[in-house]
Image 1 (tube, one colour):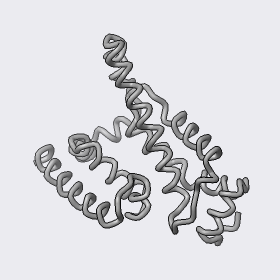
Image 2: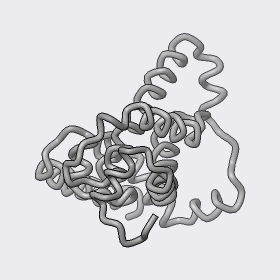
Image 3: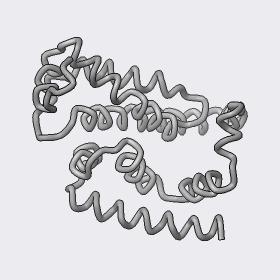
Image 4: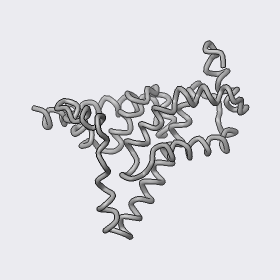
Length: 185
């Protein structure tokens, strides 16, 4: 696909199931989709599987995709968000029905050098402070700052107005600053 193609052209070609458009969207969004799923899924669930499920649903629902001036990724994050929520609900039911096996899977294996890097003092403090935030604050910050979606795109994903997303982001950042001061004085 031509790197200079506009978002609208990409959207139209994506909606027409153009393989080049799908590959372009896949290459630029997969790492962020996987990271979002990895951070939001319960322990023991595979982020790659969740993203694959998201993309499979996207193929089946591509006719629902409308041009609202947003990137295709915003639509994919909306689908992935639903997939993650379904997995969270399923894991919750499993924990209630099988408490002994849920406890054993709550502590995944370490991941070598990456874990060592993340355990550095400041990074660990930021992660701790972030984990203390409410799930909706985490979701807003993740979608805005890590997934790099615009306020309008996040609004379309979570069903809020653009201004409400900006306000929620500002409040979430303030709460994160407060938590960081508690974790890393």
